[in-house]
Image 1: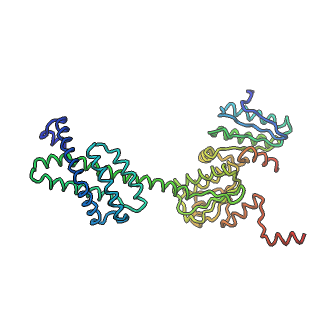
Image 2: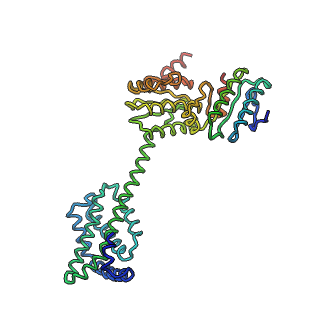
Image 3: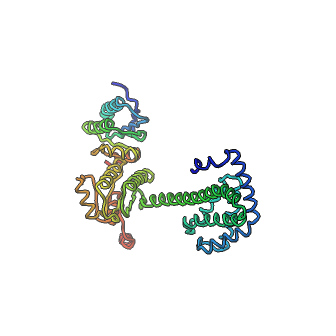
Amino acid sequence: MAWPSVPILKEGDVLIASIQSALTDVDLVALRDALVKQVSTYRTRGVIVDVTALDVVDSFASRTLRDLAHMIRLRGARTVIVGIQPEVAFAMVQLGLTLEDIPTALDLEEGMAFLGAR
Amino acid sequence: MNDSIQVTKLPPHSMRDQAASTLLSELVAHLREHRTDLRQEWAQRITTARLLTAMSEDEVFNEATAVYDQYVEALETGTFEALQAYARNLSERIIPRGVETHEVVGIVLLLRDVLARSLFAKYQHDFAKLNRILDAYEPAANRIANTVAVGFVQERERIIREQQEAIRELSTPVLQVRERLLILPIVGAIDPQRARQLTEQLLHGIRATRGKVVVMDLTGVPAVDSNIANHLVQTVEATRLLGATVIVTGLSPSIAQTLVNIGVDLGKMNTVGDLQGGIEQAERLLGYKVVPTTQQDDARSGG
């Protein structure tokens, strides 16, 4: 397995994956696998994926994020996607990529609040 | 251009230009000499023709003086930049006072006529010379009229564009009514451009104010077509991706029908009857509770 190019930080019982730059499909899949793996290692309750730096979210990225959230749910934790940019959000909706059953939040702080409230 | 007809009759370019410039300087000298009379007559004719009624007689006379001097200078130098700048400046000053395009074109043409007539009077005994003078005068005068009119219209269009932009921005305000609670009142018809702008302002407004709940009030919108309805639904979904919730209020029967026709997923749309209900629900979502001050006092004194 390739080592993910996205740093994964542990903050209490929450894992934070902060995407810093555009990712290739391979990077995304690596990130998904790493997160799903680490969820049980640290007895994690929630995962935050910060996509503030992404200018484009295509169908593959959107599907990978959705799979990631579903897999993490099956492993007993919750996922919240934070920091989707306004332009990216509208472009995604126009492509029909609405991430329907996945929680979203404005930024990292909101994401933490969301996970803390559960 | 008439060049193809004239070339056969007239001397070659350089000589013709030279002759024209001599004639023009003679012409300019004539216009300078009779400046006072001609300007007076022009101002007189502006008043008679009931042009520039929005301005006082003194103002008309002052502007007439300035325009006259600019006009003669443009004739003399053959450069129009100064005149153009002056025309733009003048337009900027007089457009807000309700001066119309036909008035501006009218006064410039009047000046052209006044000057042409003084040329007729001066050269009436030498018809050949009059012809040559007019050959030099007319193209320049027409170009001046053109420059002023175009300058005026451009200035006007610039103002109209600015106002349209301002109206468009004002037409979709995103207002914060409480911490993290935004309202987006929409009044009037929504065209595709306004819909785009609305989405953009809403999404950026949410980021800028860290909005959590948005009440989109459509009370003032009688009807939308299916494209716009679709766009509104997409806006609601995009808002969710930013982590905010939209409550739609004030849907008219016609819009409700359009939404049902395009098969909107009601699970995604949070709708409330009117704006008040929408704001109340938003407050509940955010954990606010609005209590009348009298009740609050009662509760405090009782406890």
